[in-house]
Image (tube, rainbow, N blue to C red; front, top):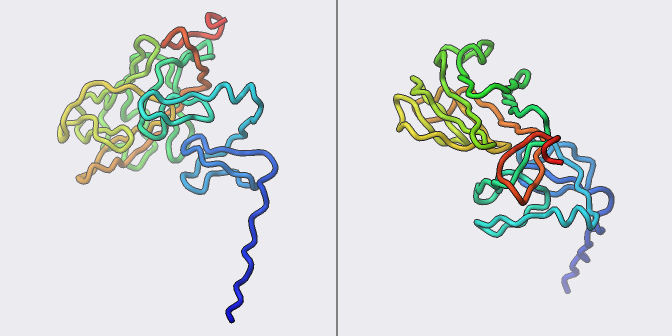
Length: 211
C-alpha cells in the first residue's frame, strides 16, 4: 500500500494586492519589483469605485485592471487619454543615468543627449525626432546612419527600411544605434506622466482645461 502525502492547499492571499504596471502580474507578498520584467510594483485598489475604471481593449478584448495607454497583449493604443499636467512632456529613462525630459516639440534627439554613453559615437548629431500632434507623441528616424528601433523593431536608418512616424505610448522602448542583428546599443524607456481616461476626446490637454 502506497501512502500519498496529503496535498496542502495554499492559504488564501491576504494583504494589499500589488500589480506590475507592465505585465499586470499580481503579487501579495513583500515584493517590490516584478520578478518577470523588473518593473516597480504598484498598489491596486479593490474598491468598487476603482473597479469601474477597468477598461476593455477593443482589439483583443483583454480587460485592463489599471488604465494604461497601450494594451499589454496586442499593443493597441487607446486614444482616449488626457494629460493631467499643465506642461505636456515625456521622459526618456536610460538603462543607467538620469531621465531625460523632453518638453519642446518637435525635438531632434541625438549625440548631445547621449554623450555620456559608451556608444554615443554611433549616434548621429540628429538621430531621431520627437513630435506632438493632436495631443499624441510621435517618433521618426531622421535617416540615421545606424538606425533606431521601437519596442525592438527597426523604424528607420540608412541600413534599414525607412518607415513613417510612429505613435508613442507610455512604457515603449526606444533604441538607438542598431548592430548587424538589429539589436540597439542604447535603449530608453518612454514615460508619459500620469494619464487619465477621457471619453469625450482623444487629445491630451492641461489639467485646468480638463476641469
